[in-house]
Image (spheres, rainbow, N blue to C red):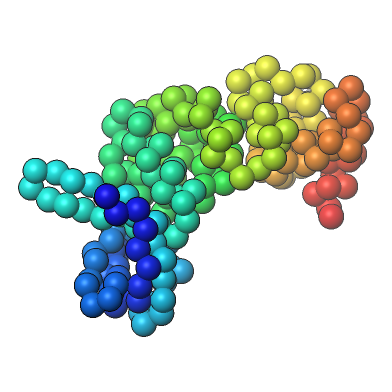
Length: 204
């Protein structure tokens, strides 16, 4: 099974590249995010997911192992195949995707072309317990986001995130800022302190 290919980019198309490895050209289907970082004639390393079917052998290439891991994880959800998983990874970074799932933000997932509200809901619901292993955030930040998404965060945290959101910040920005405030001030402070420290974090 092919796990990684290292060679020279021979051709770039809308949804795939041809990677020349010692004279052999491998066609690898990629997300638009991965394609944007590749240039014809330059050396490249692609982490590969190999699909073997009765009538075809298909390679999917990714710039990072994390993106490949997300590609695999997304397809564990009913209704999500390789094409849909690539569309999601073309629209959202792994970090964005982890945040959306932790916050149960199906609207963010539904931004990907071809993703309807039902599939987006299944993704954020079925993967919520698998997010921490794939998140680029600190454990504390991701834990807080999961609490917010599940509606079990403390009232001080909820009020602080709500207040920052009302000031025009996104829910994700507000959650990040409040998480940073908790790291600085501890978990027992009130919402007013969390808002003040959160604003300081956002301003910085």
